[in-house]
Image (cartoon, rainbow, N blue to C red; front, side, top):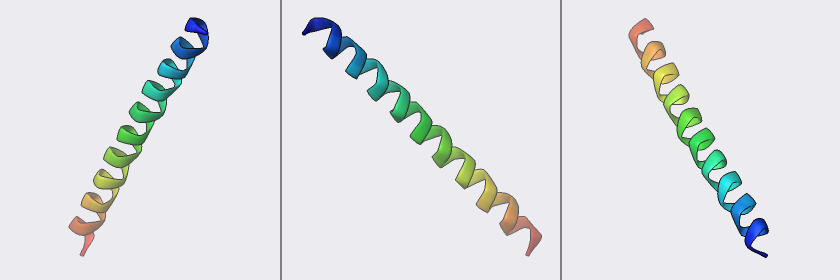
Length: 37
């Protein structure tokens, strides 16, 4: 049971980090696109 919780926590952290990275990437994309216009 403890191992399962550990794995769940790790994947949760990974998805959160990925989500944050994706958000930053989108923000930088929109920022560069704004400079074009």
